[in-house]
Image (cartoon, rainbow, N blue to C red; front, side):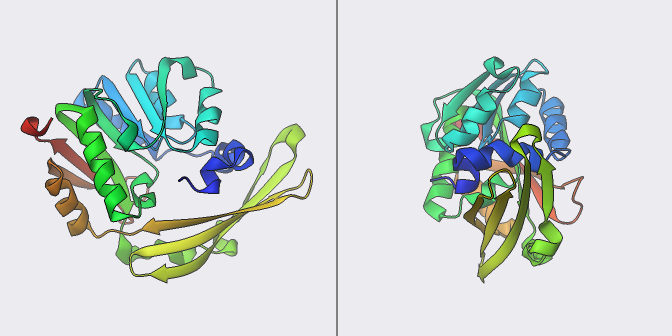
Amino acid sequence: MADDLFEHPRLAAVYDPLDPDRGDLDHYAAIAAELGARRVLDVGCGTGTFALLLAGRGLEVTAADPALASLEVARAKPGAGRVRWIHGDARALPPLRADLATMTANVAQAIVDPADWAATLDGIRRALRPGGHLVFETRVPSRRAWLEWNRDASYRTADLGAAGRVEHWVELLEVDGPLVTFRGTWVFAADGAVLTSLSTLRFRERAEVEEDLRAHGYVVRDVRDAPDRPGREHVFLARLLPHDA
């Protein structure tokens, strides 16, 4: 199940206004161009920003997410009719024969259960064409990104016009090995509503991710630095072995 951050209609509606700078997606778009991808699968598409960016460039895009509220935000955006939207996770994917599958915005880390992670890699494999690629990012555990997950460092606001002002921040709750749990808080000035959402992310080591990819039929072609967050994230580029499609 998706966290309330993505599943609650009111929180899904303010996701984009509270995070308007999506320069991190430029790197993914550049990889799609580098690979000459024409058919792209966006897993964990959220409110559809990346899917719509690619569709606007003429690519054939399928976007999937288990959070219906986020998908409804995506489907209401201009150009949404050019994207095939799927409500579900990677296990719900048909055999698309996609050239490229993506998981942006640390989607991979939100898949914390090892069985779910294995099912995700398998589901994407079935959706790719022989020789297709998978690209996704994960935070570098040694950088301990969670040290900045406090109100002072994360506080932000957005003015939603007639809907009023909304405040948001996150607070670290627990670090248990590779699992990091935090709480997000949203305060809506219009009616004083305060909503919260609990989230847990898994911080995987680079060697662990590479081993998982190989075990599920991928060849790791490259592990890159995230251009917008140098030294803080790994971007994995893997190719599906032709005989596994």
